[in-house]
Length: 324
Ligand code: ADP
Image (cartoon, rainbow, N blue to C red):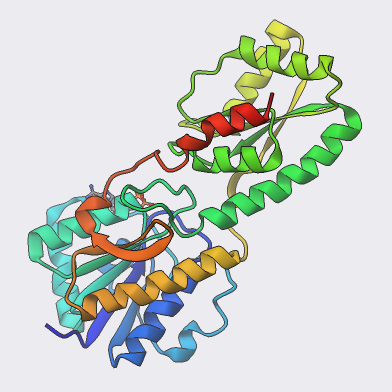
């Protein structure tokens, strides 16, 4: 089948670099004579018929902008079969023959349902700062989020050093260790607490005191937010109450989600957007654009619908060794 009209949406959490992928999809499609309809606010917008015709200039001057010009959403209705059937009717009525979805594993599960139930052609592009999708070494936005956190921690380190302070710096990552580990290694953090680690306060206190004893002027503990954002405050209280240690808390929060994408994110997103359209032209679907051994490739959707925390755990030992 050769496609003449495709739909494009972002779903789930936004990430810097999504705009680069949108631009690459639109430009590659138009280059190949394929019409693109942008769908605003993800699956929810699709169900409401929020369509936006895309042309070459609608993606002009967006490559450097964080967030997504199409906006995104979470859509509880999409979990129900009847709403997905309604979406297929809406797309058919609009003339949309295939759908490209930029999002995380949840969004890919939504895409898989569309394929399984209706054989509606779908291609996924992994966009999440967490770098936690199975089947790919990389997801769009991770590099920018890490860079933002590193810049923030470098600033915190300046003041921590001047006042000889300990800081608990909380970074994003509910289930994913990737941001915490990469940021921890790159900022020379004295300790890194991963999302599902049970905090060993005794060890944390021993490490901080050992650092002080050998003349360290500051300690940075990188804390992945884990299932409950703000857990750094609990750790702060235990350090104070049980070990008489004063630690300051800095929660980086959503600043890690925004901002201009790095060169790495722009480059990978541009390749992925291009390849997603190519996959449809080649009649390869349902698929996801992935990075494997550093190269951008297509993979079957079924290999990419799970959350996975494997990408960075191999660096845990490196972080421990370098922080003694
Ligand atoms: P992300 O794509 O970033 O992982 P979510 O997990 O919030 O974000 O998923 C985004 C949207 O994808 C959900 O709001 C829902 O509409 C859809 N979705 C998630 N999981 C499923 C599923 N198992 N089946 C169908 N749709 C799903």
